[in-house]
Image (cartoon, rainbow, N blue to C red; front, side, top):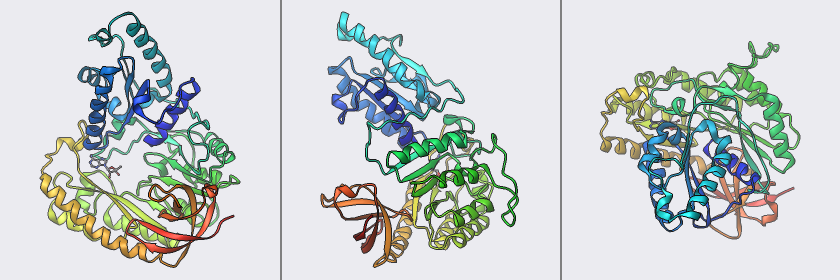
Length: 457
Ligand code: 5AD
């Protein structure tokens, strides 16, 4: 989601006449979009901004800004702490960034022009802008071609915010309440992307399957197909029907609200990719309850079974938090067991990170750092062994790969994803970018596949 937000801000600046440069030392304006979901992400952004401060000393006219979640959560405090920072723009104001940048550039130029550079930093923040106030309903979708002219895949934001209130999560604070765009607006954005050569879109939402639940009614019953069609499934149908779109992904759903109409859509809409990222967080019912995830391990496993029955061979990946407050070794064993039982194609493991203002921050963060690390490593190692097996099953198989970009590792190779979301590398000419190729897998590693092209259109 941050990638998509950054892209949108970059487009809006380009539309104003700014140019994208490849290196930050050449830039007149440096904006860091930030994530607050774990402390590590905040520390990285702060560290990076600190390093940029050295550049600020020799180039006082350069504008520095923080955007996004950390800006939203910390606001003006950031300006006080970081002397060279000029701009702090929250998640609800991405569409105003270009105005603010214009303002700061103009004011800094005039100050730099008439006085010595030392004057440039105003202690009273007169030259800085903070805007993190909430403003609903302003999800402009600026797209232009200047950033990535031959792009095969694209992200499309379908909603903002989250009302689920998982106790560990800062997102409701940084991104506000759920609000959704209309199906027709999203479909026309996808049509425009497809007209530019995009073959695959990923629909983005904090809880993507709850799309539109406050705004739009569920559809009428269809014989034999469950009680009603949720707004999200209506959206999947509309986007699926767009000619020229080859693959449709969505991320991330919540196990709550992953109903039969969605499972049915996965089985009947062939453009939906063979992959679901289904965050589990913990395999212990006690911890799930404390996290306010409102499902049980058993319900989750049942859901996975239904998804697999709907689309045999579908890849399933997940997020796990280790070391949530109160997590005992027995709780962690439950997680290990469930992970083994499900047999994931991929795992994102996170050590619990206390986020200020979340309900879990009132609990004692009582699992030691060493214990969190030990659980992290144990889970990671078990997953690696399992994943090697899963990836080996693809050896000698033929899979379809969307060719997305030249490989960063070898000049002769291109890289892309299979529909089941495996990274696949293979020798191919760059002209094939954006095509879906049939590839035979010749090597399997634990995180990627290697192969040879059989045919491309
Ligand atoms: N600590 C650790 N991991 C977290 N996540 C969200 N909040 C926290 C936190 N406070 C993880 C969850 C989520 C993913 C995007 O980040 O697993 O699914």
